[in-house]
Length: 91
Image (cartoon, rainbow, N blue to C red; front, side, top):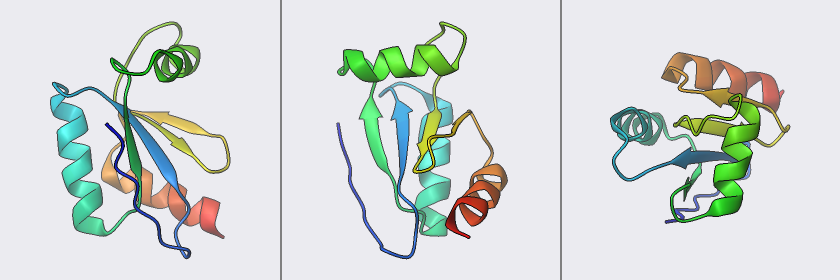
């Protein structure tokens, strides 16, 4: 499942998720409320995405994992951490 949303003034980020992940649903709701632009990739439907998640999480498929335009990743971040990182990436 991919949900692209684009705004030029915001850096793009990708959320690696699963349909059953409560932490993922919470973070999606928070990012929607904050107007943060992102796309969602279900790691259970995309083996390449699952491999990426494993590479940044010590071999584990831990979600939500976010990948930012600058190539950095965060695992299960708070909305405060996401906003702070987006400010850094965008400046």
